[in-house]
Structure formats: C-alpha cells, structure tokens
Amino acid sequence: MNDAKNDLVLDPVAIANLRMLGEEGDDTFLREILAIYLKDVPQRVKDLKLALARNDQPFFTRSAHTIKGSSANVGASELKNLAEALEARSKTEALAELQPAVAELEQALGRAEAQMQELMG
Image (cartoon, rainbow, N blue to C red):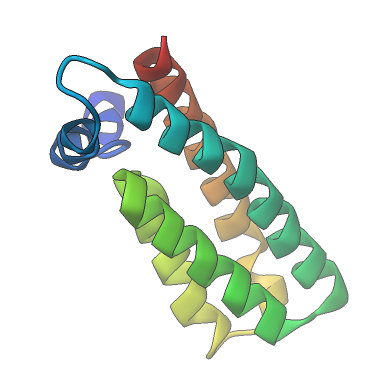
C-alpha cells in the first residue's frame, strides 16, 4: 500500500513538463521552481496551523487554496489533493475537525520534499 501512495506523491508528467521549460539537458529551471516551492509551502502549512489556532476560517481556506495551486503547478499530486479537500471542508466543517487532515498534509509534504530533493540532486 505504501508503494501505491508513493506513486501519487509527484506527477511524472508535470515534472517532465517543468523540465521542458528549461534548456534541454539542464534541470536548472526545475531545481529553481522546486526550491521556491519548498521554501513557500512549509510556511503555508504553518499558516494552516495558525488559522486553526485562531479559528480563522477565511485564512485557513486561503492557505489551503494556495497550497493546492502551488502543488498543482509543480506536480505534487498528493499534496494538491489533500489541500483541495481541506479547502472544501473548511467551508462546511468546523476547523477543529480538520486538525488530523492538516497533520496528514504535513506528512505528505515530507514525502514530496524527499522526492523533490532527489530530483534537485
């Protein structure tokens, strides 16, 4: 089961598309995009936690939306899907109920980060 979950972490087609945006045979652009993502998204996860602590639904929803979009752009499929679900749930459920899903998203970030670090060399 773990292998199936790992297959969903990064979308190889999206990674290939990012590679094609750079010079042929040069992954500099890919590395730059992934580095920006890995600098930004952990802060957005902190924002989710802060929004939970403050019970700030609009801030929570915006933070989840930002993670969803950023993750879609770099092919972090698992994170995109989890953030999309959090964004939707935050509009209809009490934020306190979303704590376990935020923890799951944070674990998914760790998996994505590990695979991105491998790609970045």
